[in-house]
Each structure stands twice: as C-alpha cells, then as structure tokens.
Image 1: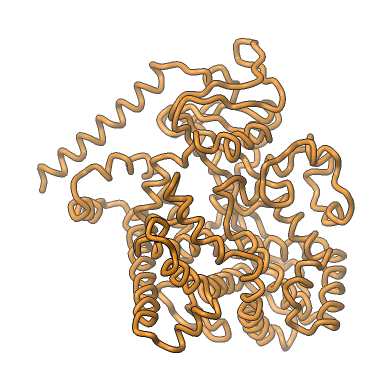
Image 2: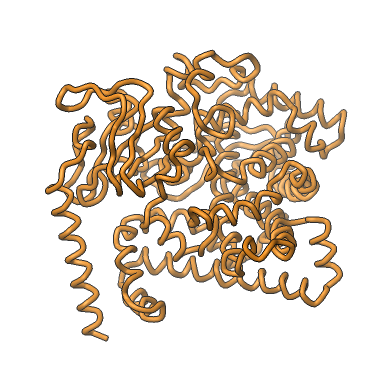
Amino acid sequence: MTQSLLIALSLVVIFILWRLVSRFLFRTTVDNIPGPQPGSFFSGNMEQLFARNNREFLANCIDPYGPVSKVRGFMGAKWIHTYDPKALHAVYVKDQDSYTKGSRAILTIRMLIGPGLLAAFGSEHRRQRKLLNPAFSAAHMRGLSPIFYGVAGKLRTAIERQVKDGPKDVDVLAWMGRTALELVGQGMMGYSFDPLVEEVHNDFAEAVKSFVPTFSEFQWARVFVPLVVKLGPPRFRRFLLDCVPIESIQRMKTVSDVMHQRSLEIYNEKKAAIQRGDKETLLAVDESKDMLSILLKENMKAADEDRLPDSELLAQMGTFIVAGVDTTSNALSRILHLLCQHQDAQDKLRAEIRAAIEQYGLEIPYDELSALPYLDAVCRETLRLYAPANVSFRQTKKDTVLPLSQPLRGVDGTMMSEIPITKGTVVLSNIPACNRNKAVWGEDALEWKPERWLQPLPKSVEEAHVPGIYANLMTFLAGSRACIGFKFSQLEMKVVLCMLLSKFKFELSEKPVVWNFAGVSYPSTGYESSKPEMILKVSLAP
C-alpha cells in the first residue's frame, strides 16, 4: 500500500506541475481582458474573492472594470468574471449546451451527494428534470401549504415560550435553520428531522447543518478531484481517503457518509412500504403529501427510457436538502434582520398579514398568500439585493463566443463586442452584481426599497433582458438549469414570515450582525467569529 500511495502522490505532483506550466505557456483571448492583479501565485484571486469580508475586492472588480473582467483561479487559471446580462443570457439560455458546471464541480457533487439534479447534464439532466417537474408545480405547492403551516406553527409556539415573559435575545438563524430543515424534510421526504417544540439530537440533521460550512473549508481540494477519481476502484479510493490526515477532508467524508446512509434508509423504507402495499404509505403517495412519494409514483408510471435508477432518485434527496436548507433559512434571516433595521416596513408588513389572517384565518390559502403585495415586495427586494447564493460557475465544453451588452476595451486597447473563448474556460457569474446593476435598476439599486415592486419597474429593467426565471433577477439562475425549487422556497418564506410577524416584533439586539460572503451568505456576530448566528431581540407584538 505504501508503494500505491507514492504512485498516487507522484501523479498528483505531475498533475499540479503541468497545470501550472500550461496556464502560462499558452495565451488566449481572456488574457486581453483587464482585471485585478492576483493575490498569490497559487490561489490567484480566489482568497480575495471568497474571503468572508470581500466587499473591497468585489468593489475593485466592479467599479474599475465593469460587467466583464478577468480573475485568476487556482494555479494560474484564467477566468471570466461577469454580470453582463447579454453574456449571462448566452451562458444560461442561448448557448447553455456549450457550457457545463465543470468536471471538478460535477465529480465533487457526485462524490458527496450522488448523481442528482445538481450533478447531471445533457440527456441525464433532461430526464431527471422531466420526472421532477410535477413535484414543483403550483398545484402541488397548494397541497404542501397545510404541511408548511403546521411546521411554522410549531416554530411560533417554540419562540412564544421563549419570550412570553418579556423580550429576549434569540438566535434567529438557528431557528430558521431548524425550520427550513423540517420544511424540506416533511415537504420533500415525508420525514421529520426536528419537532421544534423540544430539543432533540439527530445525526442526520447535524450532518445537514454542517454540510455547507464544511464544504466551504473543503473547496481547495476540488482541484484534485478529477485526478483522484481515476485512482483505481472505489474501495481503493476510499482507502486513500481514509489515509489523508487533513481535518476538513475527514469532516467532509463523515458528513457525506451520515447523509447518504440515513437518506438510503428513508428511501428504502418508503420504497419497501409501497412495494408491500402499506396502506398509510400508499395513501400518502396517492395524495402526494411529499415529493419523494411523488417521484416514486411518477417513476413507476414512466416509460422505460424515462425511468430513473434508484441511485438517481436517492441522490435527489441529498440534492434537495443541500440546495434548499441554508439558502431559504439564510434568506429568511436576512429579511428579519432588514425588518429590524426598517421598523416602518415591519409594521406595514405586520398590518398586511394580520388583515389577511382576519379575512382568511391563520392559514392563509396559497393563492391569497401569494397575492399579498407588500409581503411579495419584501421577499423580492431582499432576494434582489441579497441573493443567498453569490456566484455561479460554468465551464465551456467547446470553443464558443461570449457576446456583450456593451463593447469592452481590451488590455491592448482594442474594442471587443464579443469574446472568443476556448474550451475549458471558466465563467464566473456574479449574481449580486447583476441584481444590483445601476444601469439596470437605477441609481438607488444599492438601497433596500420594497416599494419599488409596488409600481412599474424602470424601463431599463425590461430592456436589459436579464435572463433569470424570477422577477428579472439572477437569484434563481436561468434556463433549463434554473432552480427547480424556487416556488417551494417562496412558499416556505411567506408562510414562516406570516406566522412569525403576526405574533412577534423583531428588533436589533446589542450583539452586532455581519454577513459573511460564502457559497451561501451567512450572518455572524463579527468577522472574527466563524460561528453562524444572528441574535435579535424578540417580543410579543402589540
């Protein structure tokens, strides 16, 4: 085994050296794009870009260089950084078949959560999406509303117990995380992670909560994934993984193992119950109470060429959890933080919600909930200004051309209205920069103003043709790979906000709140603290 480890190490060294040399030997059109200087030889601009407090670096990318610039990836890789609407339309819609997430990203996701929607491309992705679409329809969202209200009602009871004797400092992020996980668990898997009204320990829940923070620490190792997957059969690769003395890698391995094992148990339990004709489970399937039941039902009815193997169905569970928990919980936390800073908006929203409850009851029906104008405006404006996910990566599968909305002056002084890019080039899409683009949204683009959604949007918004599937924004991306669960997330957010704001008042506490840049932005009490938390003062609303 020692000889095998030495061979593996030698291959890694050769791989690194070739990647380093080739990046500087061969010039491409990307070299003619202006951009900031790399922070280091090895990491390029990545440490600057993904620093928890990277506002200065992002400003230095956006202000001097505009919608298109060059940044350096690991080991000298030349990446295109963009928030140009026309370029984004090409990447995500018009020429989407020319792009992939990149072998590193796809192989990493497959290793950690399996061949689900996030790791599928081409015909595999189309087959999975076709089967999944019914589970995310508006009709099914209506059916999920009672489940969501039930979960949010437990959250309301739990917080009420904390503040019944007077205002209390509450870690709102922790509650939003627990709630989002329970909403995903019940709505997507028919499984309860957390009763909310009492403290319980759940290994699966702890692993899910740890996934994104651990994955962020693990990012650097993705460089080696394409090489590692070629090192013999899975059992040998597992042996090599067990031998790696790096804490972040071992922690990621443990999190992935726990999630996979419990997902497999839930999946097998439900599938076995359906196969043996368990009445309760069959009733749940027939009534479409959770998305896993829908998938099993749709898969059984599908034609042979459209049917998904168990491995792909199982991977959807991990995909839904990873993609749906932190994004929604952190978006809810952001809304509540903003409402603390804008008490007039909180009062206005509470009045709208209470009026709707008085008319329809505590569980406002789906269509009426969706139509509440100020609630919708608050959600839209928060998701515009503070998209939970900050960046999206695509890599060219072949030589292609990236069109631009406005000509770009190259380093050599030439003007470019499009950029020829070679196979393997990474395009980094800056989602917040697109959503905050003053050329699109006006001079007040950096201000949180829900009222902008209560009147016609500027003509420039329509003319920009931002390709996003939601509200002229890139928050949920665009094209066939846009977020399939955005309606699910919207319903979660609106139900939770209604249940909380109708009962409680939220104010800033003495503990500061800062938002950290990451794959999914998260709050902490300062940049010196890496612990995700957001302490707000909560009291019963008058």
